[in-house]
Image 1 (cartoon, rainbow, N blue to C red):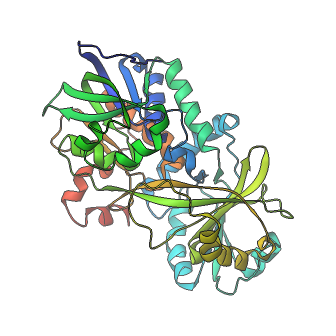
Image 2 (spheres, rainbow, N blue to C red):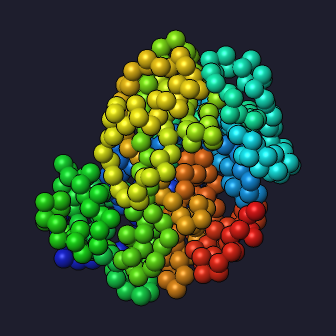
Image 3 (spheres, rainbow, N blue to C red):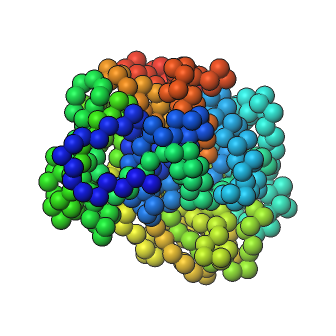
Length: 425
């Protein structure tokens, strides 16, 4: 690994600089290493091996049931890779179960033929079927139908990210941990990039502070050590996740990506073994839950989509009162046996939401040799292999793979209102 430990008056040069070591940056670094360009690649992150990466804090679901052909293709290609390396990150095909009310059920059934046309098995279930397959389910009076896709499943997002990083390091990618980008200069390559060394005990505050202006971050003495470094980068990839818009502002680009915090709770499910069960998406109650292995203990991971959540970086935990008010009534209505299940732990992770909830990947408009790989909108883990591998192909050949042309995911689509709807629906 590469660690710059002192101020050097000479400027270091790198060929490819990946900003962000979450699931996006790590998957790209892995795929570049597989193509033999690892030694020319440097990955920088504020907390590369820490606990605040959004990739570490999500549900780890992997699915192919989408209403859009491109999303289906990206997930199918990723799952093929996950099957081949399943033991490395505990990929288990336990399926996805979607619960719908009458309006959502009619909508879902309109795109199921598209899903099946890709040879994806999807079963349609009704209340009696659900009660038979999952006897722990309670009130289903609001459920008009459900779908079960047995080829979908879950994995350990931490282990997936570390798999990517291990492959990248083995292929020669250099890592810069505990460095923050504070300035990107020049209108064309090579770009002059200024970094500041992070205080080890201030990682969380640094990440929260990085949503402010870059200049404010660069002068915040309590967060940074005195060490500063400048790099010349021929090529930059913005894979900064929830912080991608802040990085983009450094090269005068208005990137439509915003952070959205999401509260996650782990429960002790006591009498129910959820390990064989699918990943549940309770659309009606905006709730998802799945089995989760935590410190060698079987738990239930639960999260609710709070409609009042504000866009910001916020690692604070809402605690039991929040759970009791918002999540417990919904969850126990669906699974009464969880009424007295205690909370083991909780955390706050972040989605990186694009303006249309599709990934943004490919060249940045009007910025030669700067590329996006962000805005993954909660699909990062499930599609990271295909996205990272496709971008690596583009960076090394100048074209997208023949079977995964991602021009439709370019940032330029936001310059033409309505383009995305026409492409995907």
